[in-house]
Amino acid sequence: MSKKSSPTHFNVPRIPFEGPRSPNPLAFRHYDPAEVIDGRTLKEHMRFSIAYWHSFRGVGGDPFGPGTIRRPWEAGKDAISVAKRRMDAAFEFFVKIEAPFWCFHDRDIAPEGATLAESNRNLDAVVAHAKQLQKATGVRLLWGTANLFSNPRYMCGAATNPDAHVFAYAAAQVKKAMEVTHELGGDGYTFWGGREGYETLLNTDLKREQEHLARFLHMAVDHAKSIGFKGQFYIEPKPKEPTKHQYDFDVASGIAFLRTFGLEKHLKFNIETNHATLAGHTFQHEIEVAASQGLLGSIDANAGDLLLGWDTDQFNTDVKELTLAMLSILKAGGLGKGGFNFDAKLRRPSIDPEDLFYAHIGGMDAYALAFKTARRILSDGHLTGFVAERYASYDSGLGRDIETGKLGFRELEKLVLTKLGEPALRSGRQEYLENLLNRYLTGG
Ligand code: XUL
Ligand code: CO
Image 1 (cartoon, protein in one colour):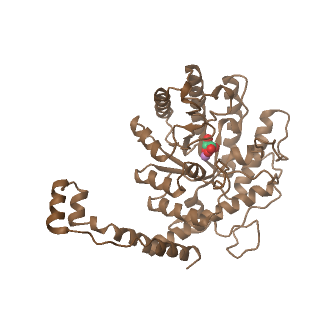
Image 2 (cartoon, rainbow, N blue to C red):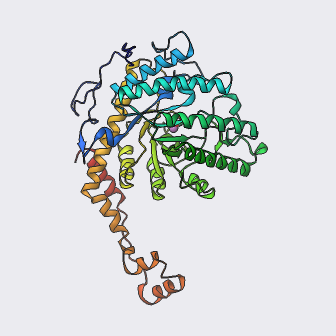
Image 3 (cartoon, protein in one colour):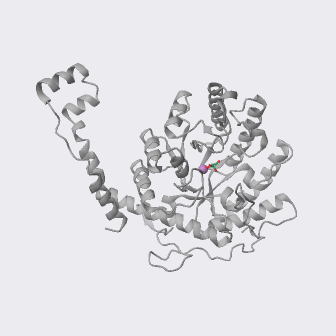
């Protein structure tokens, strides 16, 4: 993609929008990046992002066998030139798939060296290349992050490691990852605590580990201030995998953690669909819990397989699930500096570069359709009107006095004994509402 090296890495043209009836498998049906809605293009509304680690470092390996995916651009005289060539291919893909953003871990884009100093030099070389590519294409960085889970030094955690030396190393690594995120104009920075949890309480001081994690995040907040980084910080809850128990289990436990340690003004949630379902919640539930506290930040867009108990990171084409999620996101006022980052990977036998296109076209179309359907549901107002009406008894009189703290147990007892008596029962109308939702989903 860069001026000098303009070989085409993908034998696929820029993906056109052709509308819902197009038979072309390499066209968008619902995501028209140029469509203007409420003064903004769909591209600006959706803020789609490509996850470098899955789409450009994933090779399809699993615990039973090595990778299956071999990319033609994985060639060069040394690790840095391979990294740059790979990045050229990635930016060609970002442009052709009409994604305005990308996300990376430090170690995805540049090889780790023998020392921290060497790793930092490698990172600087590749970040300089990324900066040129961003400038040439207009693609921007949604968020950066550090890989604090692959290297053996982090086998017992990074910020929650029992060894202060490892904590120090992780701090140094994150400092640099924040600085390169800032250098690339990132809109955010994500903390996913890959191994911030435990395997057994027999060897773990849980209280101390949580305090260390909070200390680490406060250091990050301080460093952001000192370098002038204004991007949004996110934590990304996940209940398990790789550790048996992760400290930021789900959004609710994440809120408790942030509030306990005075971090709630500095971080929001990056909610991942497959992490929600691993925690025994729906995607929409996690979004609603975060939004209820003003802490909804960004989305890692993927899906799990409900028949499996692990993080399969699949592309999500379930329009019903996404429409419900979109309803909650739009009601909350959108994602602000966040976006929809495809933290999703190809299945092991999907080995061709074209498969990357099919996967993202499916995910982007499903999200765009969900966005449009959710907007229709909200503007019709039947569903929101139903919910508002269901709680209307709290809008005045008795309910208002309960909400505003005017009444206590004594007064309420007196009211029931003397005036109110037995409440009348009302249907929750679940089946009626499910049918209503299906009407919207089928174009009605
Ligand atoms: C792992 C996961 C990560 C984070 C970034 O389950 O979701 O890729 O999104 O570290
Ligand atoms: Co993720």
